[in-house]
Image (tube, rainbow, N blue to C red; front, side):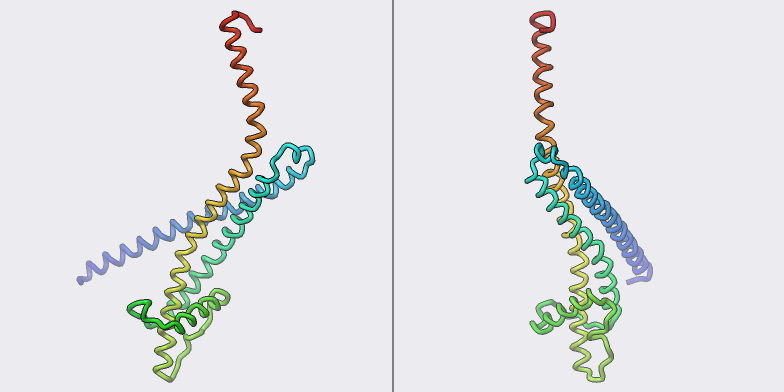
Length: 214
């Protein structure tokens, strides 16, 4: 491969990473605003619906379920914002350590998978750890630890992409919360609006046929 081709591939990878980072920043900003909006809606609705006169006219069952949906939005949104940076930090830290990559995930034993999941869990709690990253005099033990560390990096990279699933759930529960919270208000407003429309229609029909208002 020529140097020109290598330079083109390097530029393309840089552009790809920039585009990914820009897209992730847009998603993070959207989730941040959605979490703030959901918190404001829950706080405002709790204050408003605590008025006894409104409780008689509002379907509290739907309002309660809207609060549950907004609480899920707040929890999932805050979790995604907090752990995305932590997971990226952990993946970068572990990726800089010496690793051995297997040809396939099937090449890892059950014990190696168990150790990898355990190290991933510890790494999420304390990203800058040196578990299976210390220098070993025994070459066989060092190769085993480097192989497990490669699997740890793979699991952390998969976790980074799983954040998108959490963001999708945030949008779904936001829509559910808005539908549940607006349904009681619409049902209350629909009756007078419909009555006014019918009265207006009757008046127009009477004017048309009788020539004067009834």
